[in-house]
Length: 418
Image (cartoon, rainbow, N blue to C red; front, side, top):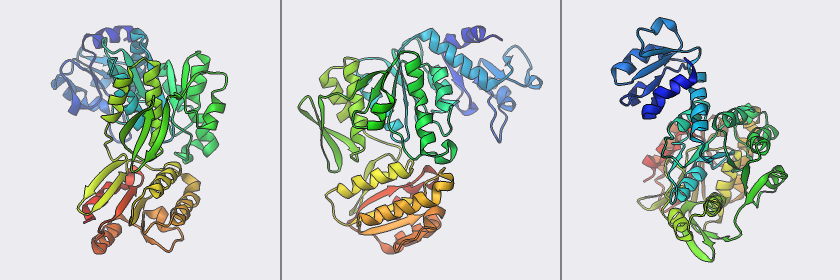
């Protein structure tokens, strides 16, 4: 079946699904394959649960006209998403970077939605499957789309740009994330800059952090908008406070590194002529979730939970920001950083040495990589070992930073802090 014909089925309800647990009435079910499953095997179940059609790529599963046979289900999903994007012809803001993508996306969405009907990437559905699903969640009422794009290899951002065709773009930063896949920091810069390459070739617009010299350099010769001069940083203690057009704004975000995320959201709000009052309202009412820079009170302790993800760049700025906070009895609980390849040993030792240089009161390092580092502070191979230490230590009246890669699930530590 040609994409134009498939689109006619899709555009009746604008509903797609790749998981039988999330089937909605009259949706299109795409039978994707994974390392440990074959979506074709669930096509019949999807139809029984209310899907209108099941898109499959193995003829043996085709039983009637409600099964649509294609050469490759994933490629068909991507082509349908791109076809839909072209049909809608709405402005799309593409976002990538090593750190802060999701928070920045949510802030931009909070601001822009004050004036326009926006739809943004849900959670971190930002890969070769998530981006098409995001695009297909847009419907005829959507006025602006906000698409987060993640990558751990070169050419991935280029590929995702080809699907979502952004009109605007923003790269949060170039950091030491996914070094194994990108082949080092230069590979990260080259890979993330594929967004700039796309926008330059299409004569589109980039938004740029004025304080990042490398971003300024990389966007030379591209149509660009710099962070608004109407914004000024005040302090982080512990929440980011800034002024916009001389009016103070108190955010609910912790960490000075979040200032740039807020500033770009305000800048984009200005660009799309959102009123000053609405911009301020959006920032003031935005609260982080999903283990991202959350402030938690636990009995006598105050905890900064930033355990959604970690890499050497984000870990360093989190520690720097934590060190600047005017608090006593500071404790850090740091978990392994993943996907660093051959750099893992060096980068984990760097973080141990850097954290030690900041003279916090108590340190807990956990994970196989941190366990191999040289330090006089406590280190644990497993979370179970960390848990036992926290139970025994009975931490009281401390200001605590918890940060590690998602696979470490360090939010579990909160249960064992009294």
